[in-house]
Image (cartoon, rainbow, N blue to C red; front, side):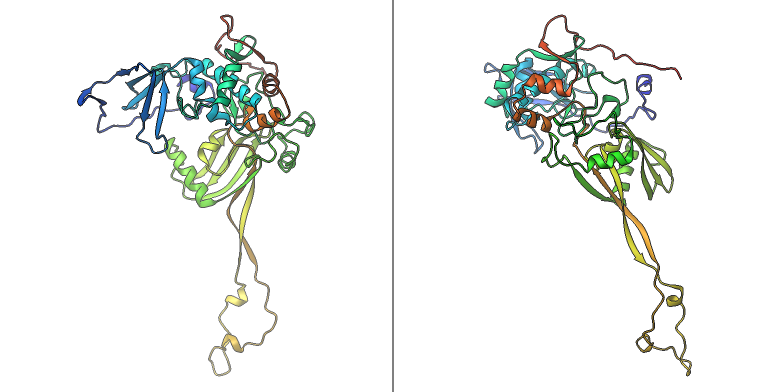
Length: 426
């Protein structure tokens, strides 16, 4: 809790749930069923077919060994132990795609290897090293392994990306929207010197030192640029997503309820407003005015709380509905005829009626921006373009991670050091 708060989390809490039933694992071997909490599997072929009880997983092939073990959630985790280079065969094709140029796939292989080795400690408390989804890196065992990705893994075997002889925080994303994000633009914590704001273009399209994207007018001009970037032409490079207030309220309410937020019981959203933007354009703080009070969202929390934006590189355009209002004269009682009966509307002379005033009612917001994901580090779609231009994998990596070195893994390289917090006095 102290560590979370030291890194900027203001609403950290411990959540507990009561589980009414306790799952138990069983295994059937030659018709005999065994029940025990931990089971390890090995095969003479060193390959396993695993059929999952989730439709989106299907059947997958795994090398190495498998171990079924209980986890902290009251269920079980299936752990696959494989050498690092075998692990990459199940990651690289699913992260970059086999249609990428060879040097882009090589750059992805280096990053996947570096990321895995730097994060080996991440799930130590759960008795495994890495997860197999987008919270870490997508890993499907040997399913999807292909000659194109295998060649890239072999060509970069043992190569890692370092800064000051330490493995870099090898973050990457699908699409940056034209500019990469420093670490602290997305998450709380100290910046990494090599994770800088890089305009994702080989042309001199925009000088961040002269035209900061923290300025709203500059940012809107930047987002309106659509050509000359490495990612130009990709679907998620530029986007506009419209979301009615009802959907925004539903998304936000669900998120706040999961966080036990005191204002989770709001019923109406009155306004959304971007109140702080980084020099690289990422939204840092956003305020939501509700009928219960003001709610503040920060950095990547915005993407967890709202479904509409694809990244934090966006601006807001309100969407209004116009509704005519009845004029006081039109809404008054009809004038009676000489015999005391109201005059039918059809018989009233077509004189020029007074213009009805028009009311603008806020119906929702359009999120207008670029990129998909956090935008830190290498853009995978941008790397496609650089590979097509003939750039080597080393040059691609230097472009997205300034000041880094590509070198073979050796005992002198530190896998991870505690980041230094730089404090300043005012």
